[in-house]
Amino acid sequence: MPDAAVHAFGPQTKVREVVAALGETGRDLLKKHGYDLGEGFVDVLSQYQTLEHAARTERLRNLDGLLQELNSAA
Image 1 (cartoon, one colour):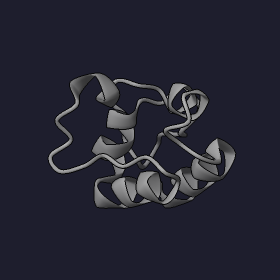
Image 2 (cartoon, helix red, strand yellow):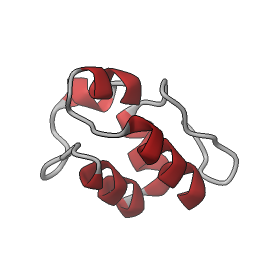
Image 3 (cartoon, helix red, strand yellow):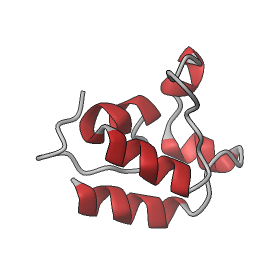
């Protein structure tokens, strides 16, 4: 699992890695870019979805912008 202090987020980063590393900040940034985790994040399959796949399936907007913000937050 990534550590926010040393991890660089990229297209192959999984949604759950963002949440594990950044907590509420990660959730907020994902939501800002269109990816709503919902309450409790119970959809197990989407937890393991990469950011790139989420963008390709239109669950996420502006992948490059999200990655910039995630890496700034880390």
